[in-house]
Length: 372
Image: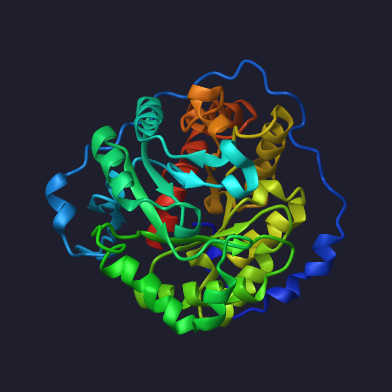
């Protein structure tokens, strides 16, 4: 773990960084110093061990065995050493029809199995599915595709963001009552499925500010984290709202080192990425392969910036597959692109292969467990 990360002060006011100063920065589109050519594949990443089905009935949530913290998947707890290569921000099933019409609906279980099989073939071991009830969470289907493919799936819990939040429901419910619901998903399972969440999120803000309903959702997530110890993963797209999210969660007693701020690569302000990392949280560049080639090179530049600043241990990488045209079957990158294309691209740009592998192994493992 980076030395400055160990020195992170959860009580420090996030405002010290200066929200307005960061927002006023000119868009930095430097990306890589030059185009990366002739990217050679990295040596194969080791596959994870197959799931031990007998553990699925265990009642442990996030339980240490001989100082080890297990991660809850949709088929039961898994030891950190068995996670393998981790994609920390993805969606297997999702309903974003209100924003993207037909392209925003992933509900084909047979296709999901084929897409996840390709991830396994690429060397992937674990996928974190951050779909919540507002956008079509289906715990039973996640369990079926995990059992069918061997890909371990960590399911999220909590409430998404505007405009998907039920404002009337949030007006009637207290933050503590919402935290109770989130905690039940973690300790007992979602409704009658028995499938339990292993991470809180993705929760967050739709715009450059946090709405009243989103604030209540974030506060409830913070309280559920304090009860269960699960990591929080946020949605902070397009604007540098992740800093306000960290401030709000810190007000609920959440250590920034237990927070993943998502969609950082959608905010084209390198100073913002540095400000996040300086707070101690994980910085998630999770649009890898689902945008343009320009976006891909720009994301690589953001990664290099943080590594050069000494924050390599806080970088997370993922695709955020959430639309039909993100899937391989429809001409998209699928869930394996990061492993087969983007990691070699980073190595070709000059990063040490050991560091590159940490982005998809040790870093997400530490993010999920809270252990260095």
